[in-house]
Length: 153
Image: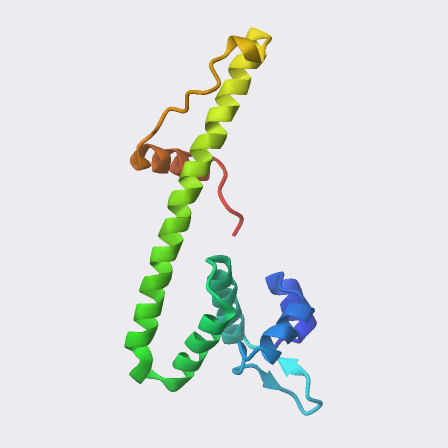
């Protein structure tokens, strides 16, 4: 069992945010001790990690609250949960696509400024041409970057 402070340290989610989640109805599964303090277990930590993930994908808190409610309702809501996650996947894929386009623009500017640095002048470099890459090529760049810069566990 973990106190709210221990959970904050363990997850990186502030105590304030954990209390807000409780008031917003996102953590009805969290128990309280005899003194009324929140006590978290490992399953609660997993749920908090999922809530954080969904927030980071842009899912509105109201939808997350609905998902939590459906989980409590049991197997009869599996299809609704599936539909919700399929819809969220589409939103995440759209974000990835936009991020890849943004990455392409940033990489282009890096290339321009590297060439300008080598030439000693920005005027010596054709800055306006932005070569278009396929999504496959951009995904390969992302995969290479991720291989070189793995996320901490």
